Length: 129
Picture 1 (cartoon, helix red, strand yellow):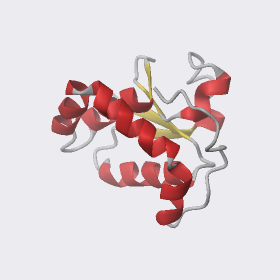
Picture 2: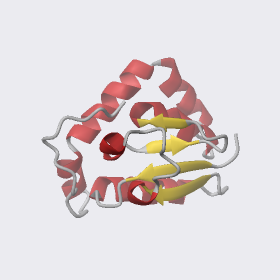
Picture 3: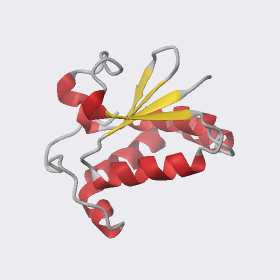
Picture 4: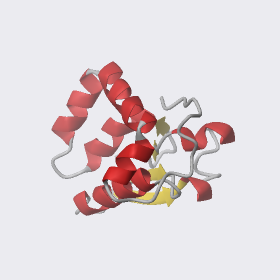
């Protein structure tokens, strides 16, 4: 599949924490990381107003996967991740519901992890799809 770029919100504690954990897991260098705030070209297919709603995985051929759909794309390239990717792909509705539930609680979860608060208004409806 080549390198997958993970676009994440650098102003969100939970997002930074997740990106850090993915970096640690990625012992083979399959992931690249870029803040959404610096990803205009990479995320051209995503409307600017929706970019901070979710993380994105961008494949080497330019396909963009957002929110729950990004989970199996990221997992597939990580050591030991393919079986988890299969699970996420087998039940995409469940993956998306879990992803949305986490996003809806990102400020609270970030605080529990000891991270700075998320700059995104958690009360704003998201399209994290």
